[in-house]
Length: 313
Image (cartoon, rainbow, N blue to C red; front, side):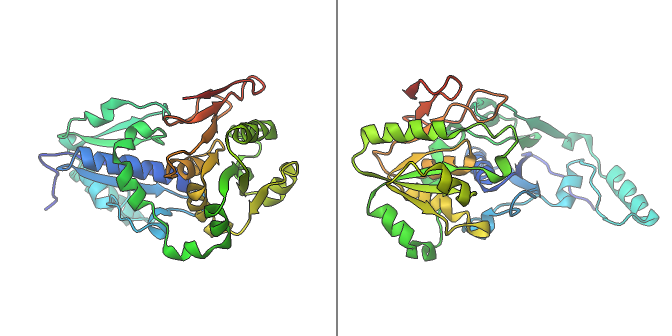
């Protein structure tokens, strides 16, 4: 006998993209679990194919409730149970899906393209209905109220503390500078120039005594050339490939942060617990839109008008 969800509904949160995006989606998932404690909150990780796949449980000591194929079918979603192209398997898929496709269990799909803007409707859902929610949830409005929980969840293993670079970060007026290239080149994300970073560095120099800039990038050779004008710097090259996740932790330990248009550096700055931190971010994320996720107190540099404006949000 096939079981059907009764009473409280189910909320499925889609996960996709790299580590920074997955952390945003986890934060939203965690916030939903706090808001709807009696509701099943599930995650769909089938689209976590970018970069190094589904990274969260590999890096952090966290567990997620992943939706299964059977649960999808019980919610009326047409999904293949059998991966074979054989005739018998096709017939079985068709019979099973038709037999248990109950209308009352239909999934309500909600994809939010305005992922930099908080929308309260996701915290006012009908808990008797079933939802599939897809977005980046790229604003602190969705999860700032559970920040203390996230600080605990997003801890890196203690073995990372042995780094000599981390000791330098701790013992200086450190400033992280995140330069993202690689997968950004010739895409709609390729929007920042070295002029943005020069403007940000000038601002830091005007506010901080003896800053030491720690450069993080997925293109070390380019970073070395791009920042050759800067004397007081350290190029952090030890965290590459599958160890690149450690850069988020290193950036969070810096006193101040200069962000790229990236969820990766967003988390480095957001998890920074320095009460007097200065966080600088661009006002654009994609070529097609003029906005960027910001947090209270962050300094925003206008990248659309030759960098003339610096403002604190």
